[in-house]
Structures are given as C-alpha cells and as structure tokens.
Length: 385
Image (cartoon, rainbow, N blue to C red; front, side, top):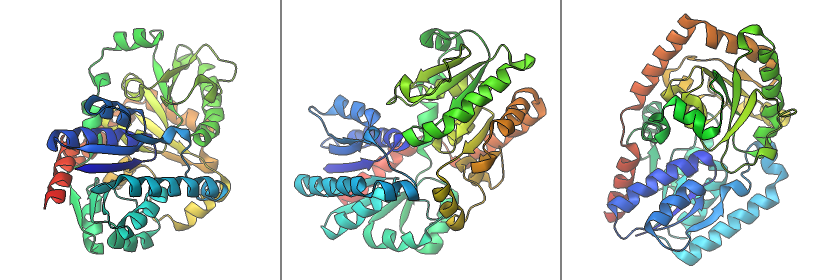
C-alpha cells in the first residue's frame, strides 16, 4: 500500500521514522512518500531506492499565531504544493503526524478528494481550540492518540480513536545514547570530564534566537559562582542547525555545542534547562532533573494565554496533573529565576529525589514499549478492512 506521511518538525520526524519502521515490517509492499526530515529519510533509504522526501521541515517550520500571520503566503504555498503532490501520487492513506496548523488543512483537502486520512499524535484540542474537534470528526477516518489522559477526553467528545501507548518511550529506551558510557560520550564530542548543565533551545530559528541570550546570561552567572566554576554548559543543538545559529556570546570556554545528540546530553547532565516541548518529556523519561522555560512573541503569548485551558505547558506535568518541575513562561523566563532553580536542581538532593519519584509515575502512566510498532500494525489492519 502507498502511505503519504506528513511531519512538520523535529518531534514529528522522530515519531514518523519509528512509525515507518513499523509500516515496512508489517506491510512488505509498503511504498512511502513523506514530508519530514533526516530521520524519516534514513529509514526510507534502508527500504526503498530513490528519494521519498518531498519537503524537509528544516527548511522553515512555522509555529505561533503571529508567526503564521507573518508567513501566511509561504504557508499557503506549502499547502498547495502538498495538495498537488498528493493528487499526483494517489496514496492509499494520508498519515498526518501532529503539526496541526498545517495538517488540518491537508486533512480537509485529502478527505474531500476521496483519500483515507489517519491522524497520528492527536492535535492538542484539550488544551486550546476545542472547536477543531468537529474537523477531526469530519475529515479524519481514524485518530491515533498517545497520552493516557486523552482516552476519556476523546471518548467524551465522541471521536473514534486508537490508543497503543506513547512512542517516546520506545524512542528513548532504544536510543544508543542510553547504552553509551559517560567516558565514550565525552570523547566522542571532545568535551572535558566536568559536570554538565544541559541547555535545550528548541529546533526552530525563532526559538533559538529567543532562548540563547537568556541561556548565555544564565551560564555566565552560574560560572561566576564558586560552586559552579568547574561546570560546563552544553547546548543540545538541533541536527539541522549550524554553529552560527547559536549565539555563544564570545564562544566562552565553558559553553559547548553538541549537535544531534539530545539524549546523550540529557543523560549525562546533572540538570537541564529546556525549551517547552517534547524534550521536557524526554528528560523525564531519561531521568534528568529539569526546569522548563518558554518565551515567544508577545502578541502570540497574549493570544495563547487567552485561549489555552490547561494548567501546565509541559506534557510531563500534564500527565500527572501536577508540577513535577517548574515552568517559567514569558516574562518569568529570566536568568535570575533560572539561576535559583538550577542551583536547587543541582544541590538539593531531596528535591531531586522527589522529582525522580514523579518521573517514575510519569513513565508508568505512559505504559510500556512497543507503541510505534503497535500503531503501525493498527494502521495496516485498518487499511485492510
């Protein structure tokens, strides 16, 4: 069967790649064409010749209300290009992976054009824009959810779904980074044998430009303290970015950049400061004490604050419905606040122990391994009905 997958950011590329492995394993005749990134492309090349990658998300993902308005023409052009490619290729199913701003447009188009539509990793309608539920019902043949708290929510809303666990558990547990020794990790990246603080600024240009000045201020303040003088601050950089994307404020000797090894950086760090997103849940599964920070355009933030209905922005906190770790948003995302929290994360053993206990509960609620393969199997079964 022919599968057309659409992922628009780094997390979608990760989950899309694992889903592709499952599809190839369960459908020997699987033919896949996709929007995604390097991880999905690597899986494709293991199983098919040529290139199935239509558009690389690293060429410019767009997110946020204000950003979407500013780049409306660019976004519309991508939508039209995707629609034309789907019509030309004629897949058996269009599989949308998260990325709702773009994928809802494609869902409506694909459904009206007569294609079967699956949505993998449900849009977060439980957080905001609940009116989108009617689009899920109208344009999506089957929704594949990944969080346990979504089960009751979508059941109450009358949305047809399948739940097979969370694929991030597989992504973390199967990663080579979880088996590598600290010595090998340091040698591979040319890092000194010193304690580490991980800094994760996101994968999009806008996020990086917003986060990096605060991170560099934080690193400088902590490095000036005697108890942190021997620490190194390691930026877990997105694989598609270059060193020039990260403003290192003079390339201080105690700040380093590691590309494409977020799990390794998190695993060997004493604590992490993380841009809100998938990485905060990854840190919880890996076991790294963390604090989350997020800042965006003020216009976007004001709109988000008016419509978002949830208590937390981090998935890990949402899963247990309490703050396993702190979140500093917008004007509270400052070096001063982060300094105090990082000091506590590093030095307060009771604080670390309580956070680890919350992490264990988060992992338990997400279920065991095998979610990606189970979702692939369910998709193939749905198509063969």
